[in-house]
Length: 458
Image (tube, rainbow, N blue to C red; front, side, top):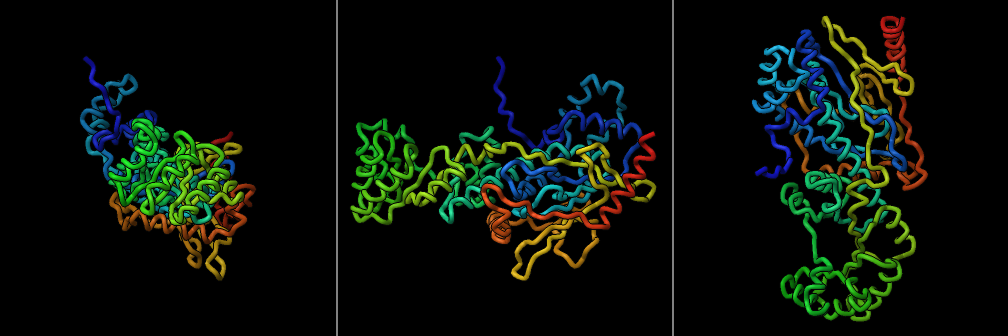
């Protein structure tokens, strides 16, 4: 009888958490003795619709991968059995047995705001190592950056009210739910419903009751009192199972130890006002009203524009899937190759997908109040008088960077959002933040374009 598989990743499987063509290219490079040092850069070509910035996230998980990626005997046996590898030498599989990443990585710290056409991560390593890691890098950074950005928009719309991550059950799988909880916290969420994320990451866990709790008891009043008996110091009740206003009255009967009520459906502006009246009439001004149910930044913005007396919001599906912009098109492109001791520029020349060659850096210009003015993408070490965003995080395969606590990353994101002027972070019709290429980079690009055109286009 077949046994079920969890399909959860393990450290033994990290080597094959990649696209098949990364392995075929690796074998090809090996067979032809190509071990040149190359540089790839990860960046976002175009921002998704309704995104005027991106919050970089996922670096810690990528660094864990880099320092642990190996090929197990079982993985190597599997690769060897594939028909495509029937003519590959035994030496390549011996190479895989000892595979490890030994290169250098520069990256912007997590929580940093970035924009299109900016190098967010720069990898310099032997070609096989730099190639194999591409898939994991893209999967990890694209996803968490997308969710952290969505979360920051939801938090921005809340005008200082708490946002709770309720998205685990609607995420694209259990592992995605954990990564999403992390990214949501980076974006500014205060807590999560995901217990594993709370356990692993130190995010405050939050949860009360479901409608099923109310329904299994004889009546709503009994269900509320039973819950309060169990959690007398942390009673937050879901009041919309039968009738929201009646539920509010039943919840108020708990007395002054009631901490909050949650409304999960209906006309939230109208219901929240009526519930607030009921609670205040009982002298329960301290009781918080939590709203949930298919919320996003636009709905929250509308609720608060209508002065709905809601104290915090539980946001799930829309946030952990970044529903309005579910895919972030981050890419990983070759920009330089060292051959014969000399750096050779590399770039794509195809129309609409042209890339810039050479190792690059982001230089952020700020005003006298330390607010962001513009970014300049230039050559590495080009401008020492500006704030360079990429820092070295891996040297010769070892992490050389003090990993910040998750709270520090959230603080960095919050600081970046605060320093981004209002026109560039509006929920709708935001202006495009100025990102320029330095004159030196433009010159190198033209020179490389002419050189590559001569040798590749006859």
